[in-house]
Amino acid sequence: MDFDLMINSAPKLLAASVITLKLLSASLFFGLFTGLIFAIMRMSNNMIINKFAYGYSYFFRGTPLLVQIFIIYFGLGQIEYLRSTFLWVILKEPYWCAIIAFTLNTGAYTSEILRSAFQTIKPGIIEAGKSLGISNKIIFYKIQIPIAIRQSLPAYGNEIILMMKGTSLASTVTLMDLTGVAKYIISTTFKPIEVFIVAGGIYLLMTFIIHNVIKYLEKKYSFEQ
Amino acid sequence: MELLTFGKTGWGDELFFATLMTIAVSITAMIIGFLFALIFTPLKLSKKKYLNFISNSYTTVIRGVPELLVIYLFFFGGSGAIMYVASIFGYNDYIEINAFLTGSISIGIISGAYSTEVFRGAIQSIDKGQFEAAKVLGISKFVQFYKIILPQMLRLAIPNLSNVWQITLKDTSLISVTGLVEIMRQSYIAAGSTRDPLFFYSFAAVLYLLLTYFSMKIINKLEVKYSKGY
Image 1 (spheres, chains in turn blue, brown):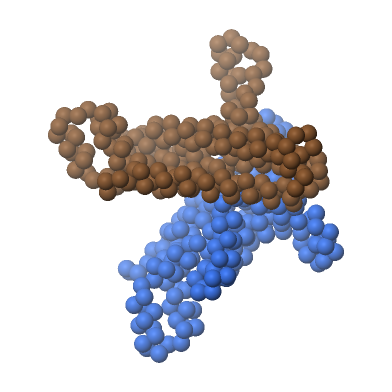
Image 2 (cartoon, chains in turn green, red):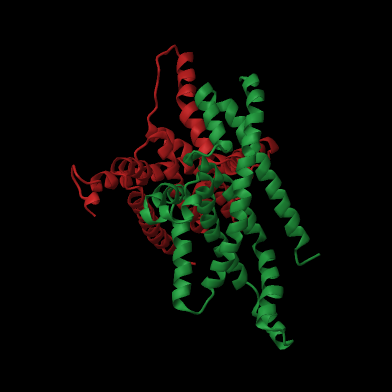
């Protein structure tokens, strides 16, 4: 055990975990909206919209995240047309490519979580709203969405943790996030166990915090007070 | 399309063998995962606190740390650890374990953590009466587990194990960083030499979709088979 290395690498790894957190929060923020939009599309009666949303979630849940990042980072840059548009400003940055890939990926999982949450809402609740003369729009925003959020909290908590682990793939497109820096230190010092303990410890700490925040929220928003 | 022809000019045969490699690594990893689950599930259900602690630390650490980091640990640390063990026995040359083994073991350990949780859940949902009945009949713990609990557990575990299989299959893409030529690595090589990354990575995505699609078909058949009589 090389304790000096562990102590010396800790500040570098902690600094890198800021990038991990940035990637995570950005992709969760955009992913929640993407997920909500596709969940609504999944519940649409229009077959084309419905099938499109199904195909989206099937593709992003059926392929590895690494493929998705590579398609966006290496693949899209190949299209000449894209290079001439303003999109190129975003797509040439690995940081934004990673966020786009993570957003689309977490959006697919989130849409499934939200869809199942919407479907488990008892029809009686919506009927009660209707019989009180509340408009469909308000029923959706004020009744269905809050209930769906409560229903989906446990599953969404898991998704946040999975996404946090997923951000480690950003290191494959040259971003120096927590895993990227850990790999760099390992490959220069050849002390994998020490670095793994420190970097893994930081990841576990983040998992622990996320887990407990979700647990707190679940308790706060549970039906039985 | 001519990029996909078999033979010297196309990448069809390379990608075909890479797909077989992905399947081989996934199955090996899944089996290694089962072995780990068979060790850690009893520990998790044990009444002894320290055994629970060992098993819980395994599943928590593996499920809370990115797969890529675990792979780097084994990729950079694997041969070091084996060389250390070998040096105790007086063998001091450099030993390199092959990428297939490193990859399968690291993915297997990850998949084992998920399998452990699945088995634990399945065992806990088996009726307590089954355990008691076995005890009353004087059946030994070992026979009780393999002949009574395991068959019932498998039925309950299959739907969740299919999720573990999907996770394992997708995780194998990560061992491309160690240089093992599976779908992802082969696409990377092909994309590099033809300068057509969009095509090859999209094709890799299609290959993964086909793999998940057909494995789901097979798993659904298994599910029907094991739920006979219910």
